[in-house]
Image (cartoon, rainbow, N blue to C red; front, side):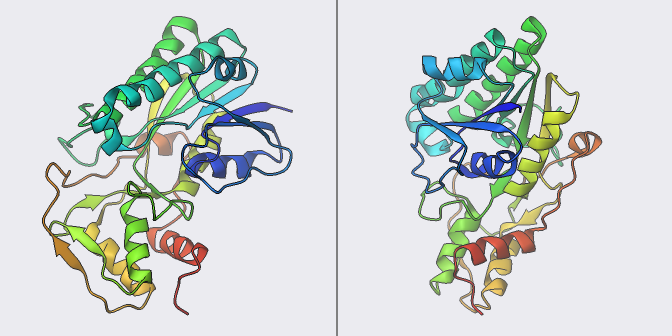
Length: 306
């Protein structure tokens, strides 16, 4: 039975990966529990509480067949306030795991990066060749992790591949977290009879991708002969304006609360959506449409009006 290490296995993507893979594999979860997640690993899954920068984490990476690295410091705001802390987690933690994988006999190292590596789009849709000009230490640290993965493939022959998800959402995204996505924030407010708040005029666009589709891509890459440091966008390839999103949430609740518009956030990216032709060539196809995904989130929170 194949041994799989999932870092950040209590997190949004990590938890869904555990659910998907534990029945047919020997899964170990490495997580420091800093996210406060309520997810509990299934019976038979080994759980190790530790940081990805620890000697134990390196040993775990060396002793598994596949490493799926989803753990990270994910707050853009915190990265701006504490860039060294961000780098210690996202750069040195990733390097520590790569070194363990190099020492061991890992057949695939899958790294979860972020669309934050691109910065302000120069053209749309954004493909993998788009210039990478991060606007935050978080984006820079995720890009650095990618570069280390690619370098380890070239220099050491370590089989690595990276993904750049766009705006991920799922029922496991915590609406009480101040850094959670706009979908969780909208649902939280509308479920209380309050209008969703949009900063700016609402014409900003994003590519919202279900966590289930991201997991599909990771599982696909596990079995594909793609291991030379390649990088793939993971999104839907479809743009949705923030106003459209707000209306979808209002419609789902059959709410007439309206929309509250506030001053735009300085430096906010106006438009962003992915070119997923590379991922499609690898066999990826997004399955969850946004309307269905929103209903799943609402129903999971038990707040959908019947």
